Amino acid sequence: MTGALLDLVVRGVTVAAPGIRSLAFEATDGGLLPAYVAGSHIVVHRAGRTNSYSLTGSGSNPSEYTISVLRQPGGAGGSLALHTLRVGDAVSVSRPRSAFAPIATARWHLLIAAGIGITPMISHLKAGRDWQRPTTLLYRYRPGAAAHLDEARALAGTALVESTGREHFAVVLAEHLRSQPLGTHLYVCGPVEFSANVLQAAADAGWPGSRLHSEPFAAADLGPGKPFRVHLARSDVDVDVPAGVSLLDALERADHVVPNMCRSGICGECIVPVLRGRPDHRDLYLSDDEKTENASMMCCVSRGLDHELELDL
Image (cartoon, rainbow, N blue to C red; front, side, top):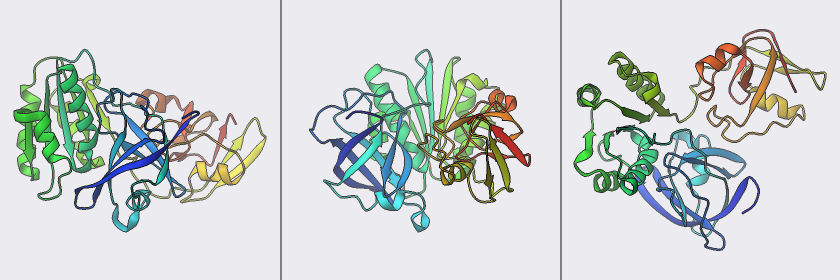
C-alpha cells in the first residue's frame, strides 16, 4: 500500500436497501488500513471510472473500509461497476480524505441526512459514540428505501428523529433549528436541493455560516455550457473546449495531464491556476472568496465565461 492508491480486495457485499449495496474492502494481507476522521471519503477506481464514496466506519484502526453505493438510473457514473463487484474482486482506492469532519469544539452536533446521504452520518455517529460527543440525527427517507436505518437507530437511540415526508421533515427541521444549544454545529448530506434547502433554512433562522457544514454528492449539473478556449501560458499552446466537454477532458485529449480524482467538483485535486479571464465556477470545493478572486478553478467541472482563459500550465 504505497503511493496515492491502495490496492484492496472486496471482503463483503450486502444489500443495504433496494438499489443500495454496502461494500467492505480490506488490504490484500488483511492488515490495518490508514485511519481517518469521521466524514471522510475514498475515491474508488473501477472499470475506468472514478467515484467518491463516504466511509461508514469510525476511522479508528480500521481493518476494512466500508461504503454504500446507490445504483443510479441507467447505471450512471461508476455505480453500475460497483454493483457488479463480488467478494475477492480487486479494487484500487484513494487514501481517505475529509472536508466534512466533526468540529472538536462544538457543543452539540446536529446531523441531517436524506437518502444515501446517511452514509457519512453513520461515520459521525460511530465516532461520536467513541468520543462521547452529544449528537442528534434527523433522517429523511422514503419508506422501504432507507439504508443503514437499523444501524442509525442502534447508534443514535432517542437522538434519532425519522421523517418519511417533506411536510413532517420541514416541521422537525424548524423545531431543531430553533432549539439547539449555543455552539451547535450543523452537518447536512443529501441531494443538492435537499442540502441547499436545509442550509437556507438554517441561515434564515440566524445560524452563522461558520457552523454550517455540507457534504455534497457532486456539483450541480449546469448544462453543457458554451465553447471556449484556454491558452496554456507555460506551454504556449491553445486548447479548444467544446460545449459539453469538460476542460479536464479537453486538456487530457491535448496530452496535458492534470492530477484528478473525483471529477465531480468536490475533492479539489484538479485545481489549476488562472492568469487571465473569468471562470464559470461550478465546483463545490473553492470558497466564495476564492471564486471571486478568480485565481484558480476546478478544471473537471468549471468552464470559461469569457471566450478565452489563460492558465498557468
